[in-house]
Length: 450
Image (cartoon, rainbow, N blue to C red; front, side):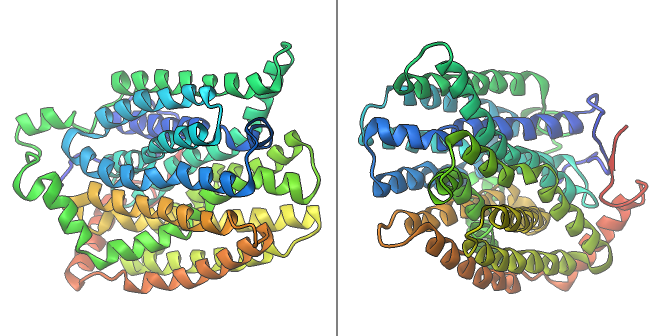
């Protein structure tokens, strides 16, 4: 896919260009999706008592919340190639708002399980976010753009942990019972999701020069048929071993983050005997690191590319992944609250930098099948969360043991980066493209406040 007029700088406070409108709307939409996706997680202690859920049942709902996203992410990437990210995001947000608001009707494990399964579909929003910024920004800043939009979107995992208990408490102050309070609290993110979907449709466009249907009419973009059809692009991505290597890598970083988002509040609540609001506040710190951590992963990816090209991007990805695994193993052994919080922040830093580093590589794997590659790799994150979920549904394993085994798995997964290689021709072409794009800006990976 040859998209022209990509931006070679990120001007944070400039909303006049289609590139920067896509930048800000894509991260905000992904951020809001977390309120719907994980809004129930910090309230699980209340839901557990209301519905009488066991640890195994809670584990099953955690798995459900991320399992369906694997399938939807695989589909949403190629759908972006076909209809464009603008329409794809609008439909996902508006339709996804419905099960978020309807989870309040759950009155048993089975209905609650089905609701979380349906809500999990909005997790595919990540793929659209990464797709949209990939087609809007040049090779010298695409790592930073992808990492920042995804990071500020992932920040929703932290703000959700903090704000949802406050929304819940505010509803209780009105005299509402707890059993009704958590149900009403979930209506709030549902409404915001729907309104964001409408705004995305009216205020963004697919590419710098217009929407995909307009570009195809003008002959500036190939029609979604033959080698550019959904089946062909998905097939090309699925046959590439590098795509599956990045699938494993992303499973071990974003999959871990999703798992922590689901269990952190109840982990601190049970392990350190905290109240619900305090446990949610501490759990929220993990996600709040996305304010800068994932961006750093993308910035370093662009900087490593400046001196080492695509090989430099892959090298940095390996470093971040290995550090994440080691930090997670240390976190699992913490029994003092202050130490646990400190090590959790270090672990969070490397987890999110690894995520940013992953999507600093993704845009260069196959430009003709960008959506398919992003979809498969993005699905890896949820596949990893599903796999990790089984560690935390077992009655025979403590949360600490599960976290330690997860750290070991992450450290091993780091070596999958060795399979991500590029031909000498691609290395040379991308190096030339990088230098050409960087020549038009003050510096690579620059975030400007103008």
